Image (cartoon, protein in one colour):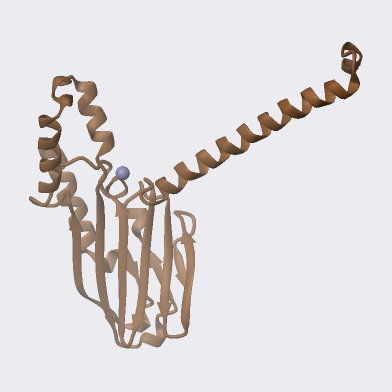
Length: 215
Ligand SMILES: [Zn+2]
């Protein structure tokens, strides 16, 4: 019916071809844009963390990499005593590796070492202070309203890295590890797990609904 409005069928097809192709190109361009934005987020996506596990000899080594949001609920340098207390509490939970990673009892695994690194711990947020000073030197200094402070907070991203080593009496019995990260840090919605075992490597995803790692 629409075609009858055009004097020439061939011309109408040509017009459609041009418009349809343009629409298609725009559509794919927007998809590409969204995908590249997602890729940038992959590097640090709130809620998502990484857990690398290696078993060598009698030792199980675990490395947790997580946005600070998952651990303490914010990523800006601590401003208030409440912020500082939140960080202190989270670090003490992270330090208690035996409660975060549950091994089969028959394996006889004991926590041998813990190392936790984050720019939010102690005076380690010096880098952020320098960054703030850079801002003060710039033209942005004129905008001292709260909106600008909020904007600065959104631009700041911080992470936690926690390294654990467990020594196990019967390493062959380590065929599962119950991961308690989700229970202790409920802002965590997914962990990408990579394992390096004597019999090969594997990768899997854990979530609050699926927290048992089986080898
Ligand atoms: Zn972040």
